[in-house]
Amino acid sequence: MSKQDLIVTALTALQPEHLDVLDESHMHSRGLETHYKAVIVSPAFAGLNAVKRHQKVYATVGELMGQIHALALHTYTPEEWAAQGVAPASPTCRGGH
Image 1 (spheres, rainbow, N blue to C red):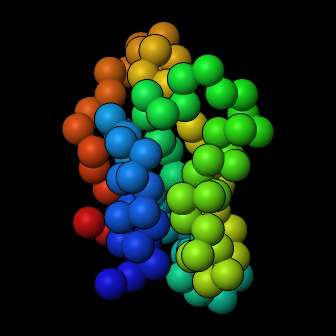
Image 2 (image 1 turned 45 degrees about the vertical axis):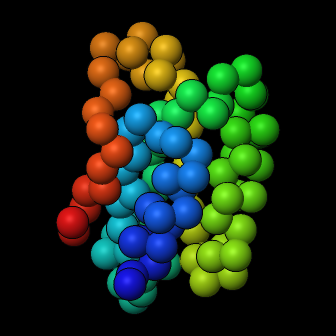
């Protein structure tokens, strides 16, 4: 199982309505599998500021963090995501899957 798959599996504990974990390693030096971007739309973020959201995500993927060089997080509540004119999809993982 790739690190990308492990991240997806860990983040599903947040009950995301929409989840994209993109492997962006190819855009960084040496192309190692160490750079990821996660877009998470989850009711679990309701009432949390950006710092608390990031802490919640890092707590969820904490044991993987020693293996990942960079994980960029984009966290939204369903309401925030809808306000951007995008409806949450069912949980998915794109970028190689």
